[in-house]
Image (tube, rainbow, N blue to C red):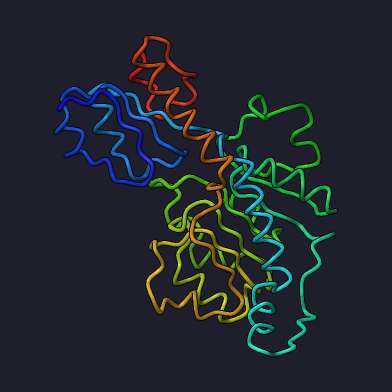
Length: 283
């Protein structure tokens, strides 16, 4: 059976799968992370790979903020204690106003998180080598955010560090033991990006030692999280199963954009080139 287009969400689209479909003309990701798609193999065939930038940005930003609050105030731990019949009143929570939020990655999600953090009274610093102020959505979207020149400049300032990076060869284990050590003692880590951006063993060590006070993680290095995993045994970690961008509103927006990407290419009216991760094939 001939297939002209594939819309991929989480299933792997390998080089072998692409080679097995000689009629394939276009691929669209239901989302923005393309680590499950062999983009190089698609490019060799001249097949554009599209993504759906911004479609789930608001939902991911809101999840980021939820994890930040939950980690800062130990909400999940207190909920579990109450359900177990214990009146455990954690009074060592972190008040966020006056603290510094570091954003590693400053795309549409990071910018939305920044606006709320500024409204809370936080200082916000960010580093993103790909950031283009001309692409910031809306006037004043980054007013009040201090853009820094490197990861190593960002980390020592970040009482709360939130990750908003794609997974690729440059970002895998970007936050390793050495970089985690650069964070202030008692810092919080929030990850709604990709689990593999963090060296998970180093993260667990930092959470056990108290160098990191807490973490809020929507994504882990191995998903689903294996039974008995060390992260699940830590009471200073809030875990959610990679659902930051999976509200009904976000899923509908991603589905609509993914379909529009495919139909536009097949009908000769290609989508915005910025939606294509291998734009060299468009030339």
